Structure formats: C-alpha cells, structure tokens
Length: 420
Image (tube, rainbow, N blue to C red; front, side, top):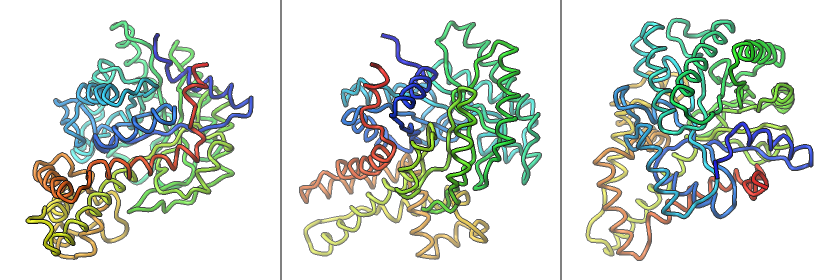
C-alpha cells in the first residue's frame, strides 16, 4: 500500500477537526541517531506520525559539504532511518522533510556572500538529492539573503523565488516519474516577532494564485511567526494566542496548514493549547539535543562519583572533550545573546560557567566527532561495570522529552485515525 502523503494527512486532519478531534503534528530535528531511535520507539508505542525535519546544515549532499549530524547526506539519512525503523519494528508513518531548503541556507554559502545565481543553483542541486532520496516535504525558503541582512526581503522577491524553485522541483520530479511531494513555504526568518494577519493572507493569496496559474501544487504548510524565539535553553519570545489563531484560520481558508518554527522549550500550558488554536504542526530541534547532552553529563556525574569511591578503575573524559569541541564549533554564536556572541573560543573555554553552558546547548554538534564518540564508549563501558545500561538511559530521557509533546498535542492514536 502506498504511504499516505502529507497533503492527504493535512486534508484528513481538517476533516477530523470538524468532528471535534484536534491535534498538532510534531516536526523533530534529527539531532542524532539516538533521537531517531527514541522517536520511532515512541511513535510505535503511541501510534502517531513523525516529521523528521532536516536543515541543510544537518543533512546535505556530500558535494555541497554534507551535514554535521552523523555526517549524513540525503541517502545516508534516508537509509539509516529506514534501517532503524526496521530494527525497532516501526511500521507506522514517518516523513522525511527538508527544513529551510533554499539559497544561502548553508552557513558557509551565506558567509561567502555567494551571488544569487550560484546560491539558487546550489539550492536546486540540494533539492534534487532530496527528491532522489524520497523526501516527502520540501521547505522552500528563499528568505535568507546576505545582501539584505538586518531587514526583511521584499515579499514579491520571496514569492518569485519560491515559485521558481517549486516549478523547477516539480519539473524534475515529473521527469523522473517520482511520487507527489508536499511543500512548505515561509515569508521570513523566524525572529521572535509576529506575522500580521494581513501580510500573511496577502502572501498566501498571491502565491497560491500564481502557483495555480502555472499548474503547480499549493503548499501543505506555510510558516507563521507566532512570537516564539529560542535562545540558550529557553524560549525568549512571547507566544501570541490571538495572532496564532488568526494565522491558522487564514491558512485554513486556502487549504494550507500553519507551521510554527522555534517551538523549543515552550511551557506545557502553551503547547497544550496548540491543537485548539488549529496550529497544524510545530518544529522542535535544539531542545532534544540539549536533553541528550544533559543525559550524558548526568552519567558523567555518576561516573566521577564512583571513580572517586573506587568502584571504577578509570573514567571517561567526555565532559572536557565535548566542551572543547562544542566551543570549537562556533555554533554557540547562534544561541547566545547580547555581547557574548562576540566572545572568542578561548574566552569560552576559560570561563567554567560559560564553558558548561556552551557544552549543554551545543553538545549535539559534537556527537559525530571521533574523540567524543570514543569517550561515550568509555562512559558506557563504565556504566556497564555499575550494572547500568547507559544508552538506554539516554534513549529514555529523549523519549520522555518527546512524549511531553505527544501528550500536549493529542497525538496518541493519530495514525490509526488518519488511515481509517
């Protein structure tokens, strides 16, 4: 039986909503292989579909620089998830999604100030690899532009670039006789502000009109800024119920679902309300990486205590190695606020408090580093001496974190409802 595509999923969710069943889909950033395992185990137990949302920095073609997560390109990403699903006997619905695809979406492309024609060509090559490796959803996001930093790109430019990329991908998809896919579009980078209902509707109306004229599919999701913004290990934005409801209702008028980005670290009372506000889907990524890193560090605390007690003959150097590599990655600049973004790696490493904070928020960027993997192996071996399954502890901490969203989003049993 052919897998239900995301267009069909959203249409069925709109139908279910009319019967009183409301839910919000969860987009999970693939921060590690452990996160994939934990996600699929929980989805099997609770019968809900998963969206795995991979940015170009996380997963991309080797010729374009590859990805920092497990060194995955699109083929490795697709094959490893399929293998994990087989190993945990998951037979439900999961979807491979490109998050923030498009020109200048790789950090190095933006910092190099590539010309628009070059950036667009690289984006197209990345999308082709997505197509060939059975991605189900492509986020068409031409809103990062090194030549207009500090201000929003003109809406007309965003629309024309979006149409150009969708038209190209659809041409390539049909030429290769590949199944239909879904598209996600967005008008600007999520920055903690709000999208006005008026500009949101103008964007959807104009975009869908021009897509239909060209015989192109309308998007499955459109990103709307609800006020969320992730910094450090908290959401420093101000979520707006009023704006979220207006955006969701506006999107629904055009048969499109509202997609919220930067949903990490929101409190339960906020995410509990998402289904009733008709927010169709929300993305969470760094929070799960933070949870995994914190689990490793908790095991390190135990390891150090039992080493001092004489129960262990040696101990790993995981915390120091992970802290060093997290600082060297430079990716903490994305999450720190204020003047701290201008600090040097040496500044980070010399300040114990800051070094620990950077390790916690950026540890997930280091999981693929050979030194970090070696120290995790030593840590797990020491846990084994103590009769503890270290990897199972880490997996369960991640599962508990995901389960908070499953409960609040009313996701349990959704797959069966969609397929019946």
